[in-house]
Length: 112
Image (cartoon, rainbow, N blue to C red; front, side, top):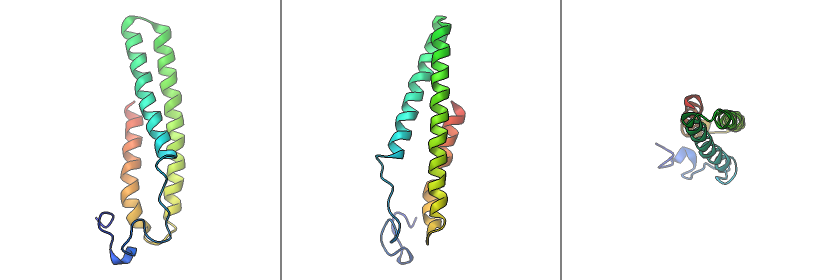
């Protein structure tokens, strides 16, 4: 809960001193666009399959798989960013926020 109400040990500021915040318009935005795009491509594949359009179903499935691979690569980059945080003071507080989010995103990819 110290992320919502930073403690004295964190310098009463969020993010803690010496740690820069991640720009939400870089990797997080890319991950969001990839997830939304993969939802579109899997829907395209599903509707093509229902209509009997095997070519559309194949292309939709391949596009979804490509997006899943790109998303997994982006998650790997994110994991490297998280592991870099473990070398900083008060990294436990940061990992409490980032690791559940990483696990949730990985679960979404497995479901697709």
